[in-house]
Length: 365
Ligand code: CMC
Image (cartoon, rainbow, N blue to C red):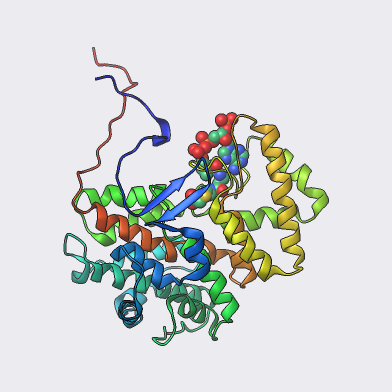
């Protein structure tokens, strides 16, 4: 049989999943029989995690049970804190998070196949890891997690040291729900590759996190704010972006492998960002930058429909609730952990992933 090369595995199907449908032609995103947009607007982080892990939205008792398990397991083991304390402050948040996560691989996480208990314990700890490291870099004492707050409210509380505004919790919850799951994106695929070897949950998630860190994937939102800061004024938007495109650079927050139309997550988040931002001049500039960017991309890449992606408005929402750039990608990890875990649970019994390459070197004499 002749091997077919698909660079970047474009259009290659390597798994069947009940978890999500990403319909790139029509701009639709479904999590297990529910529109992701509706889940983001009307449900909570825990409810959607329950949907992805257990297969259905929880009733009241199921939700209470999941909330209790998550909130009871937020504390980090002492040795993980000690190890994070030893990481120099100039090591970026994602690298420290990757190290902290990998250290969680004690006996609790050794069993294969991974269990829902492991998944809940890990998901509970990721926000604490982020907040712990953030506090250390900021030079203040880390704030211990609370058990009486929901997943998102507790995350914001640990970051800010005060009970967050309800509007901020709602907005962040919506973002975290919209990014919990997204088919076989690069990080989920990386996690599934490791899981397919029957390694362990923490190794799979650590691999996924490494993939998420890249600027073409989860690293994009902080680059969106950097781009908007660098543009600085409406008049500068066109010359700035034009010169970047002429130099062959990419505009961050635009384009997607699967979506050939507007990313539905960006559409939902733009509504939330709009509500939060009011007449914030930064947000006004961002919407101008979006419009100019879309026009220029059409001019420079007429054969490739390039639209706004989730990261553009993720940056706007996180900025509006007062999170600094350094927390954008770690916050993405807080949400995507749910989807990674759901895929790893689903893939645990699958075949080892082992594609091939075509040799283009020389043959020995
Ligand atoms: N700005 C300028 N040109 C672009 C962009 C962009 N943002 N995205 C794609 N292109 C061009 C690219 O240069 C190429 O042109 P040509 O065919 O002339 O060489 C063409 O479009 C196809 O690009 P590609 O790299 O083959 O497309 P892909 O499907 O492999 O890449 C992507 C998808 C998301 C990596 C890419 O669109 C990109 O780099 N976007 C900017 C980074 C970004 O915003 N990432 C967040 C993605 S959404 C959330 C997530 O997945 O985490």
